[in-house]
Length: 398
Image (cartoon, rainbow, N blue to C red; front, side, top):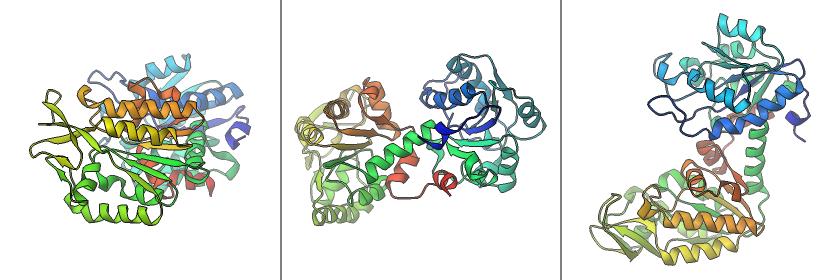
């Protein structure tokens, strides 16, 4: 049992840092409520114990103080819906008189949502005085925002020091995120496969380097694969390539060889004559793409090889798509990988999917409940697997 699950919140006010940084359309409707839904079990546990909840979060990147566009007030109706409760109040500030008064008057069973933390520059600066004002609103601090755990902000890291050790803890979501990441990083059953995709090698160098110490196999797909092909002397046409990373790509391949880690690159690609949903499409070996064409997805041979590696694995980490899956013509590779990961999970593998695009992919293909864990933390998960200590986790554990 975790400290949070063991804690009885009866008659206590819990200040809960959630990650309600959800996408909104132009009419302020929420287009993806995954992060909000993920926080519900933590909120309900506190309310069921007979406690009250004060929620704080950021939304977007407001530049100069309060901005209607980034107000958390837009989330209030949906939050009431998710909690099945009208006892959800709103404070037009996160510190100051109104926040203090509403917090003081909060009764057991009630929820108070504070206004956007980032309306204050002090939040991102990690200002101690600002953190202290937030801390004064409650008896207990619960960090349930894994998505912001890599930021040393006032509400995620600095605030914890104002609560005694037995009154600061991870929520249910944060616990699940940390234990799933730990399981992959430190308790992985072999063979351990990391599937790394996305556009840029530069974004993933550190994670690949750290995983070379742990993984048995690494699949590299997406736009970043072509930097590796060019580094090995291949022809990649107009495919995405980071020329300043060619030496690094060669170095990673050499390091993998020394450590007996199998690096799997896509043997073939689906290529297009332009980056466009209506482009002309063909197939090609990934190291022999004609001039004027670019690789936008992995091909059939790669799908087959990668699927075999996935089915052979006992632990699977997936971060990043295999191609431009937002365009129907180029989503077959990512979909094949998602289905293979789901099948391997059904056969007993532990699978963790993290990073915005991979999460979007398993959601789009209806496979989110067919993998072991879907992480809500993009940047935070990446930094965790790069071997960095996350300030939001360190602050609770200290």
